[in-house]
Image (cartoon, rainbow, N blue to C red; front, side):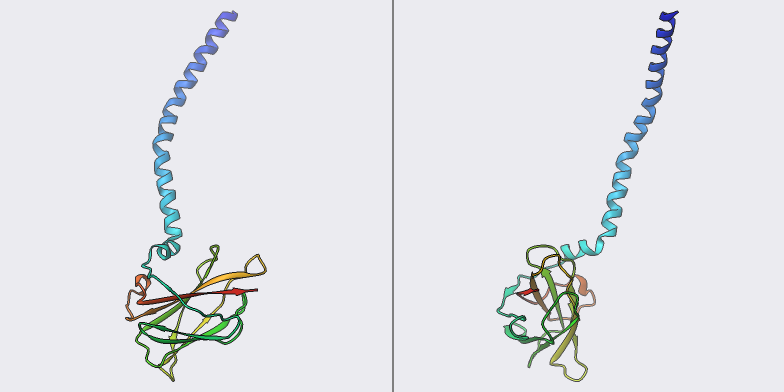
Length: 184
């Protein structure tokens, strides 16, 4: 009797293993499709950040500008002189207003972005709009995110565009300049 029970248990185990084989084969066939769909979903979900990484970038020239010591600075560009100013000392989560003034601006669009110098701090990109009363003056409202540390070093990038393309998302700047600031 024991031999019959042992034999029937072995046959039962063999049958169960054979029953699992088709389900394993289906699983291994479906797994790549699930992974591919998941990957495409992630790419679609982060497409705006991916677009930022893939967009055309110009080589930026470092300029001397310290908004924390003085609220304005000036530098020359191939598209005209730039006088950049801010209405107050820049602090995290406190909105501030930036202005660009140029006697002879040869650009159609201007943009400023604040990037963490040592680490990623998100997308902090702001477009300047021409002043309705003075076409030599451009303004942008901006703010920077808070950091977990007391002080943060930022790379401030000023991009000037010679043309105002309708497809401005992927347009490389005609002139690009950067400087560092430190906030507390």
